[in-house]
Amino acid sequence: MSDTQEKHFFPEMAVAEAMAVHPRVPEVFAAFHLGGCAHCGISQFETIEQVCMAYGVDVQVLLEVLEGVLEKNPIGDETTTTA
View 1 (tube, rainbow, N blue to C red):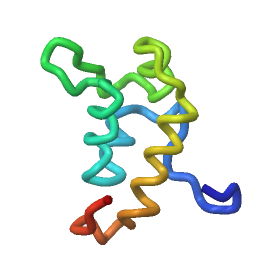
View 2 (cartoon, rainbow, N blue to C red):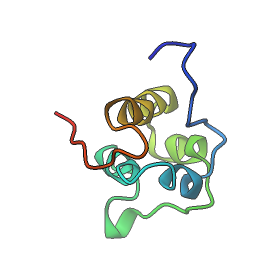
View 3 (cartoon, rainbow, N blue to C red):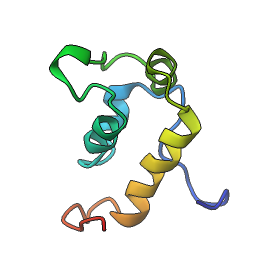
């Protein structure tokens, strides 16, 4: 992702706010094993950074993947699938 592009996700963003950005965001969190299981739920009020620290996930990697979702599936075009 180019640094000149608008970013949609930030370390200090609440998980609930991130989930509201795009319908595919929960899939990314689940792929990183962040709140995808019944026994490892995450608080919607925690920040992305807090969740990453708690689960040992590199926050920059997660942010890059989240931004990639929007590059491949622009807002308003949620029917597009990623390959």
